[in-house]
Amino acid sequence: GDSVTQMEGPVTLSEEAFLTINCTYTATGYPSLFWYVQYPGEGLQLLLKATKADDKGSNKGFEATYRKETTSFHLEKGSVQVSDSAVYFCALSDPGTSYGKLTFGQGTILTVHP
Amino acid sequence: GAGVSQSPSNKVTEKGKDVELRCDPISGHTALYWYRQSLGQGLEFLIYFQGNSAPDKSGLPSDRFSAERTGGSVSTLTIQRTQQEDSAVYLCASSFGQASEAFFGQGTRLTVV
Image 1 (tube, helix red, strand yellow):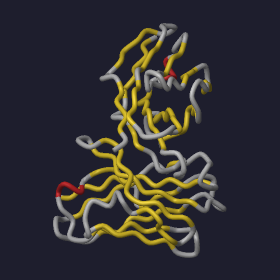
Image 2 (cartoon, helix red, strand yellow):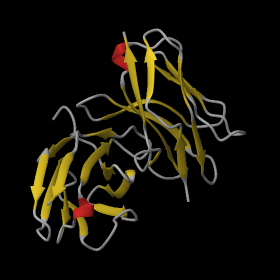
Image 3 (cartoon, helix red, strand yellow):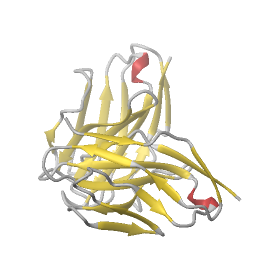
Image 4 (tube, chains in turn brown, orange):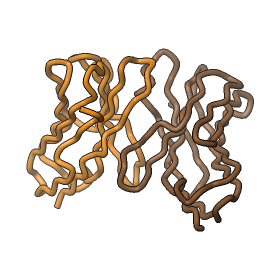
């Protein structure tokens, strides 16, 4: 079956540092890929998505590129802020199914210090 | 409402009791999803509604779990004869359609003692 593997956390960075959170997936066909973020005390929010190979999703300074050859969708940000502290989830949905039926990774806790 | 609303936000129940968890989706959203978030299992899909029907119930862990949706709006997730392993945060999400972003509620934290 489908699966998503994220890098182990927690990740602790200083403000303005570069962020990478690795995500790889196993799926049949060409899934759609997502990053969701959960800020403290809030619900899950969609951060960005990519629906086909080589697409780049971007939002709030975060980027991720759909790499079919390496089955990866790594999340990057050039300069993190304290307000980026949250839990980040990589997820996929199978082609032909609803975007809301998601297989999630385990989540990566990010803490950014001033 | 402005977002997906879930109630109660917290629920403590005794082992063996039945519980009902409620989800009010965003107005106009036809698709509704239930997930479970637990420390050991992460985020797991439970069930998907399109309108009032559930074309995908593949994630329900046992026959103690059931869900319904009425009027294409509110949904209730029912857990019968709760067990300690049912303790988790139950999340609801809704979307405008199949190819639309899913918006999540803040969840119901269920603790079975």
